[in-house]
Length: 110
Length: 113
Image 1 (cartoon, helix red, strand yellow):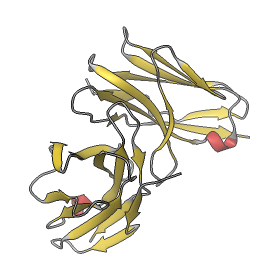
Image 2: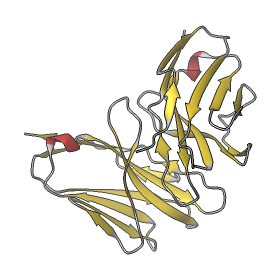
Image 3: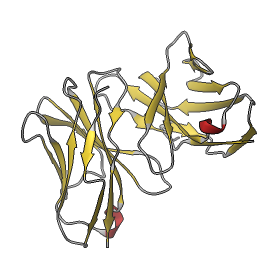
Image 4: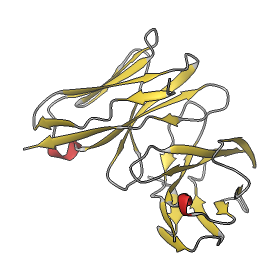
């Protein structure tokens, strides 16, 4: 099983739609979780950290399910500018090596 | 907002040549990383650096690769003898501590011909 797995998509949604991505991780000792956004040929940019109790930032909501070892990202009221690849990042404690999933591609169309 | 800077943005080199990719991490950060991303593939960990030494490296980071922090600000990745398969985007990242998110530079696109 891969360390961090994501459905590559693409998810093709109209503006205004709500879309959700999941990411599963294999190491139960993982302690830090993040969602990053990556535009074509650009660097990953932090979208949000994911906390145990779940957290929200505007239209974005992140959830963590430790028992099932997955994290999720919900985007409400999608904008054209949300079109990007969303990267799930997981890190264990100890030697801190954030590990990236392959990313989920989102295309928001008019 | 402070940011990680990388130079050059694009480097073209011939197979067998040495390249040095440069990074200036955020000044109060303590942990430094190099990642690479081959076109169309995922972001892969190469090496992490803390307290002036390598803390972890991946199997990709073989003897052809080395990292240095020659002064208080720069963090470099050297590839001694480049191969065609080294062509990729190389990202430098830094963070202030464990559990904190990584901040990435804009990347260096390395093309080996």
